[in-house]
Amino acid sequence: MIIVTTESLPGMSIKELKGFVKGSTVQSKHIGKDLMAGLKTIIGGEIKEYTEMLNEAREKSIERMKEEAFSLGANAIIGMRLETSSVMQGASEIIAYGTAVFAE
Image (cartoon, rainbow, N blue to C red; front, side, top):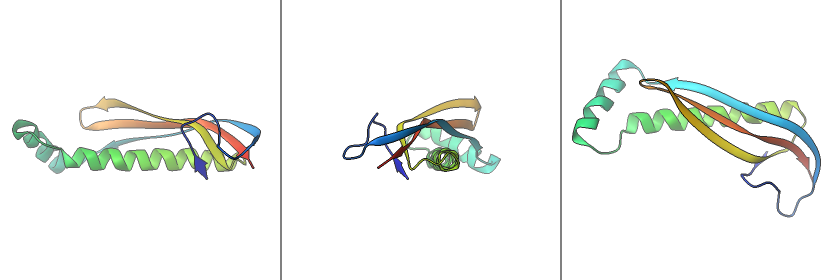
């Protein structure tokens, strides 16, 4: 499946709009990694535990969006965007969304 942030597919023609698709997940880390991350805020630097958590969440959200697009008969998603929000301390929601299309 082709996924782009643009509104068109260079070299391809959009034959049919299938509709809005999205995928989301809420991720958190277990208490041990959350404590380690808390300590890193004191000394500074990258908080790898949260970087890993957000990477996992993005991958899951995009995969769920792709599954929804496949179920509509799409072979591409245009205008893809990612949004994030904090649900609670140590937990974030990631939403991937776009427009599913069939292109040739």
